[in-house]
Image 1 (tube, rainbow, N blue to C red):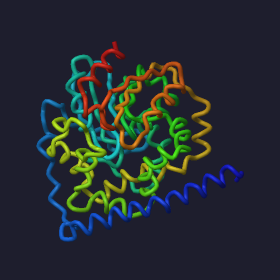
Image 2 (image 1 turned 90 degrees about the vertical axis):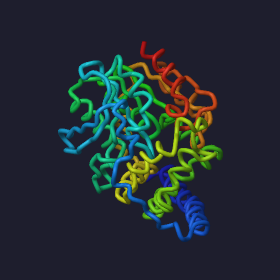
Image 3 (image 1 turned 60 degrees about the vertical axis):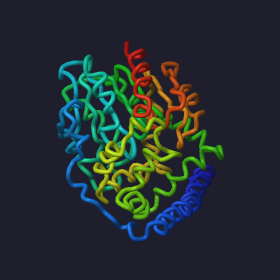
Image 4 (image 1 turned 30 degrees about the vertical axis):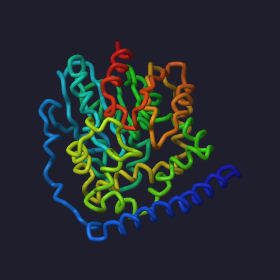
Length: 346
């Protein structure tokens, strides 16, 4: 292990210790404010009404050939039309694409999946199942299991992080790629050297702890989800596009401790823990299809500069900014996002 690797290791461990103090303090504050409701848990076994809206599409599932994972999805449009595969982020599910499922069903078979660990998709217990390399290979299996050789891939947040690499490693499966509020890994590594992004990313280090992040997400009957999606700092700006009933769908998707643990394992398996073999695999590949990056300018977790830095990874990448939109850009301002998508796709 060289000097750089040793320095990175100790910086990572220090950051986990530092920002865990903030996370534990937040957990304590929630307990102090609501001691009697802290362990409250509602009945989330029944699927919320909004998740069963027939106008959004039909629920289905596939079994991946090699990993044997069951992946659930909602699809809209005519099967046989060009595939549009939508990949959600944290802490979401297929429902984050509800506006796109309806909008693009006239031309595409739009399929919004639940990633491994989320909602009714399988929840493998071993951490190795949540490495980026494994998840990217899973996406290739998804395209094949749906009966397609390629498609347009649309992704947000963690889904976007995976699809940046998918576009390189499985370029033959990509007609076009659209990523929303998710930076390329090289851009994020560069911005991690700035205090601004380092502070914004505090939660990534807190999430390395066992148990406590799951507890914070689940306490007070999953109240934290209301902060994520409707809170003044991190939530959408257009609240009519994210009602409490909408948030209930995300609560249902991650209501169990097991599901929250799986979702957090995306951070635990990848932040500060990328295999040298995977890095070498990425170095031997490159993006060879048009890629559009859509970026909400009021992202609470990701600096605006990340968009421009990400665009530099390839001359095939273009950027469109959605002024005033939050991290949840495709839900916050679906009209503008869909406009940019149609412009790019046509």
